[in-house]
Amino acid sequence: MIWEAETFFKNIIETDRQEYQKIKNNISDFYYRKEVKKLDQFGNVKTDQNGEPEIRVLIPPKGKLKGIQKLINSRIFSQIDFPPQLHGSIREKSCITNAREHQGNKYFFLTDLRNYFPTINNNLVYEALIKLDFSPEVASLITRLVTYKGCIPQGAPTSPAISNLVFLPYDSKIIKICKQHELTYTRYIDDLTFSSKNFIPKAVIQNILDVIRHSPFKFHPRKTKTNIGITEVTGVLVKNNGLVAPERKFQKLEKLKQNSKKAIGLRGHIKAISKK
Image (cartoon, rainbow, N blue to C red; front, side):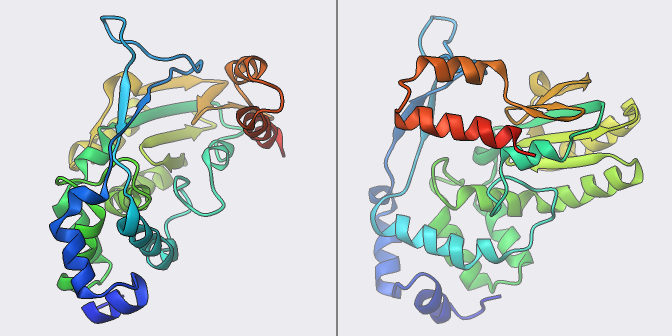
């Protein structure tokens, strides 16, 4: 990997040290706050106990920093060979390819990593980059460019790939358990899915959860469950003989204007799910 800081400035982010210092010293000027309403599985706006819409706060980069993060993504993170079990923020993979891996299996175990991005702090990012054989100086430079207020921000183009990188040691442990017990495992960002043609013993599930317990992450108890038969995996219904879009997606399509951008996109997504 990259050891010289000047090589990083010149060949990766196409920025000199002076410009970098300007960004670092005024980092808040290069991010903005964006609020989006959370949606439930049926596409309806989630509300809190007071009936107010639940809000997800995104902190996307802007200006020069946005361009730098895109360069870091394309010239560093997109070059990393992640395990085939990973489908989130991986080229030519998607929530559909993630679900397709489980087609034909009967028994499912699903869990979700709670507060995933906020958990990934500066130290975790730096340590992951050091393990990739970056020099301490370059690892520090990258960490400062891709974190904000102590963690990776939701809405930054680099955050999904960094999250994959940070969770990689725990993926390796989970993959080892799954191979021992003939389980299919996939991860789509913070969604972990396990399936098998055979019953998944509770002891195996506990072994998997223990890996997470001994990591910096926590699983979401409410989203940790087992299922038998047709199961929804990353927004796709997994059946024995194929994949199907959930009924709510067809219902949402009916409510959209036929030739609107959203309708065309959703129609294409539904078609892609059914494609063999």
